[in-house]
Length: 601
Image (cartoon, rainbow, N blue to C red; front, side):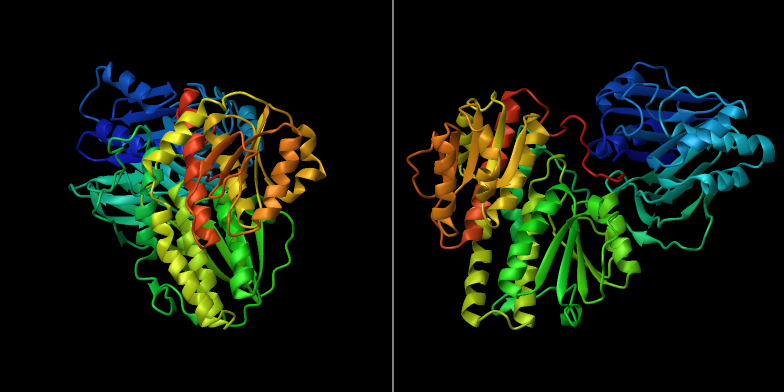
């Protein structure tokens, strides 16, 4: 949620800022801005919308090449509408700040500062930071002490870069609850900042992934940390910048990548007689009587899917919580519970706070994540990486499939350790797992079918995605994908619940996407769909078995395991949502109002 970059050095400051923001644009694209500092002045550029608009402004300006300090920001709006006034960097009289997160006590601070004569021009919470800094600087005439006083007054989640004419040789930085990395650049006297690895790769080797409560002051002389709670790490050398490789959108590329990344996800983990995770051992399971899974959005759907598998295979009680609800329900937590959190980025604010609650309660914890060195991987007792690679599309695809596979493997790992599964059943599950990459191969015939069907689903008053068992969370995920990128109303529902109210909406303009697997409760879901058809709902059935009442039909391959059907149907749902969005003329990769990494609650 929002992206931050910063630079100190003698290279092209403007180029680093713009290139870095390009790498982070998936984190927010309501607006973007940069501030460039030399001893004489600060030049600032802001633009609404995508980064290209900012780049055009910068290209059309006559910039000095002498800038040795700069900060930049790409925004996903939290306080105040997307406008240039609300775009970062935010200014005081002689200072600028960029900020990722939310300042929870900004209203009180703003009122206090207004009483002391400060004037505000934006609707944001961020602007209080720079005014608070200048308020202390005007009193103390010591920028470092003024910065310390400033961060001591802030409540909430905030990663900050601040520059000031009061000390034009420095960048002041601080991290609390939102990711920030500081790097020693490859060139002498060079210091770089970013919200994630991507802008830094190739430009630095040594980095500090800042922990909460850690900040400091950077200059060409080096980096001075305000506490000892930091350690240096080595940055990966492979750029791995996701190019589209001929696909129209990153989302399309990532749908097609799922077969390969799931293979990578399983590599070395599926053995002849079970599952082996290098990251954990059976001590994780000792004394565990319950699993509690906590996540948001797509990751929540992966967790909900796995709850069926944990209880079915491992015979262990499994509850799944939406992280934003879990945090405030005063949950009962006991030390015989394994707490599992799921996140693509490892930075999801609500999930991270839920993890901290579980840790404070003394629970064993495990994170399923795609990003090493993220806040969650550094907080949890154990981490299992999904190995999905960089996912640029805001609407998650390959993160979901790899999360689901990891959790399925984990359920089998538990089942064998707890001796709740027979050797024969375990071999059946292992065989099905090995077949998943084949189920995720996108066939030309399937993609063309979804492309042609899409033109029939651009109107109406809504969609119901329905399924049973693990196909209910898949229905939730299918509905979420459609909502995210097409802006059409859609709901996922347990098929058996339709008669308990929702069926009242059924008419020809209500589109039902019915997940009808051959290997799991087919007759039950068939009966539910017949009820909707009798009320004139338009039916699009996804199934390996012919269904005569379907108005539209997407045929999947016949397999011998319901989870292989799950992944085939996942591909169909992702493609259908994408093709509907394309026909509506939407930006598939950067849907409105959304950001890739939700680092505020």
